[in-house]
Length: 282
Image (cartoon, one colour):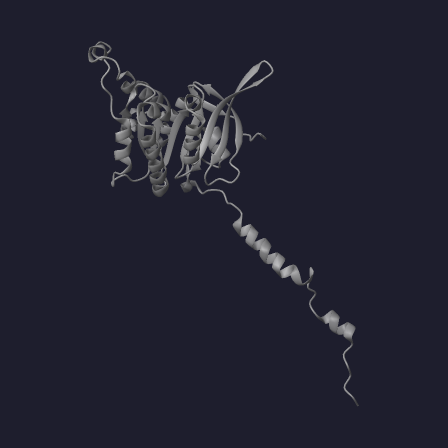
């Protein structure tokens, strides 16, 4: 007798079914690859808390380490409050704070930071370079003496020396308040070179830096250059709606964060800046 031939229908039923056709395995592999490539939230050690709860909540705990952030505004006190909270948070976490002040007297800066630290012993890691008196450099020596104004410190040279110091090591924060006064007091090309150096050192050491700037006092090209060099840009604006004026924080750039754009209402309080915790659609 000839051997019995298998029934083709039975043989087909015995084979495992491959759903989705011959492209199914590739589709699954592609899905796994896309899942692996999805941006993941930063771990806590990769973040630098600003001390402003609403802002830190937007980015799961703070801004990415290694970023140099530009605070861009019209004339306003809000950036100074931001920098005071940012400095205080670093002191509370045991970091060294290198604060280069050209905008306000040193005593005012220290008083503002102490309001948030609440512990004078924590202020020991604050290294303040006082360049505020440079605004009075055109006054005669006798007039400066009457007003009890010293000659101040060379802020730009001090910043340059810090950035090339081989002993500089994290954790630290560098604050320039303000970049506007630095551009007005020194040769602009030198100032921009120093900002580029600050960005490079900050990234290499995974530290943190913030600089403030009043955009309306500079030509658009100069502002665009600084925005380009900064890793993050936070703008302080005032929006008008009906008869009301609403101060908003506009985040347009933040290296290391996917889709960082945020539009947040804020207000100044006796406890610092308050920000809403919800993300608004721009």
